[in-house]
Each structure stands twice: as structure tokens, then as C-alpha cells.
Image (cartoon, rainbow, N blue to C red; front, side, top):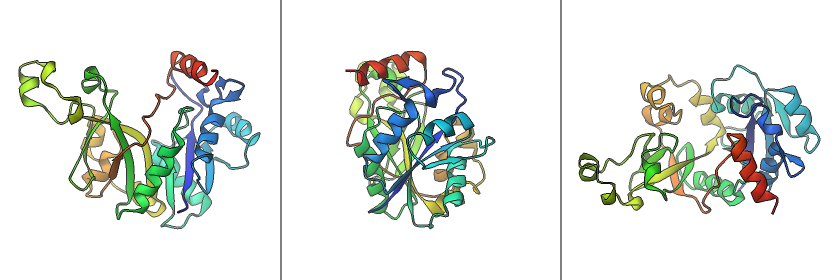
Length: 251
């Protein structure tokens, strides 16, 4: 099975400006992500950026770098431009890997690609267990529930499923962590569907939750989902996150 990986790498970041170029043990962060993606067995791995400085830095370790527009409102829109630039066939499997995950598990990349290849869904993603009760209530921890056929039913920043007895009685001890799953922000798409997606009207749900994948469900399309083979490490959003990653990769 062949698949292509695209790594969006925006230069701008409120909490960590120039994030893709942050030095981690002598390499820019985006190079660590690129190398992990290559290790997944992808037929090609591309970095898509909107900034010349990032473009020039990536050129030092691969020619597979694309300059994209600055006005994209989402990662999927940037992905659609990449599909057009590369002239990918509509049935090509494209995996979108976040550019701020230098501890990316390569096996999760190949897993989500295979998950899509073995289904009739136009899109696939992964989830993982929730280990802390507080994460159930943390809006930055996106929860997901699926149906009996492992298609996503809904994604939310709120606790789902809603445990009526525990919530109404404010009794966290009644909550069973096994009832909850955290969404991992890695997606596989069929290239043709990426073009279709950006033509879909925005949904009220995605605006309320600030979760663009809800547009797919709202318009009746399936998202296949499975538990990740490897529990994902947290990405880099802050200087503290960067220091943690440096400590891990420096050992």
C-alpha cells in the first residue's frame, strides 16, 4: 500500500514564534517530524509551508518542500492546495501530520493510512485512551465516540459520553476512564475527498466546537477511527513543551 504524507509547517505561532525552526538537539523541529514521517514507510513525504525562511531550512534536508498561500483558514485548505500542486490522483491516500510533533510515532502514520485503505470511508483518524479524570473536562482534550462499525459519531471538547449519574451528582469517582477516548489529530484522506471537503459549507457545530472535522460528519460522510498502536506524545505549543521534547530526544 502506498500513501503520501504532507506536513503543514506554518511559521506563525502565538506562543512560540518560528516554531517549525525551533532547535532540537541540533536539528530544526520540522526535520525531526519529517524523519519520523519518512520512517512510516510513506512513498513520499512533503513539507508544506507559507514562509520563505521555513522553505529554505527544509531545502537543506529534502527537496520535497512546497510553498503554499498564507491565507488558508485551516490545515485542510492548505492540504487541498498541495493536492493541486502535486496533481495527485483522486484515490491517492494522503496522511496529514502536524508539524509540531517531533515525538511522532511512525507506526501511527502507517496505521491511519492502512485504516483508510481497508475501508470505504473517505477519511480516517485515530484515538487513544484517557488516563486522567481531569482530561475528561479539559476542553483542550478533544473527546470522540464511535459506533459499532468504528465510525466516528461525534467529536467534542465537552465530556462525551455524558455520564448522567456521575455528572448530575458531581461524583467523579463514578466515572470509568474506559468509557472515554481522546482524539489524536492525525488524518488520512483520499485526495479526491480533500477537494470535496473544502467545497462543503461550514457547519454550526464546527464553529461552536472549533473542530473542523465536524463538517465532515455534519454533511453525512464517514470518518473511520481506531485506537492508536502507540500512545502519542504531546506536541510542542509552548517553550515549556519544547524544553520537555529536548530533554526526551537528548537522552
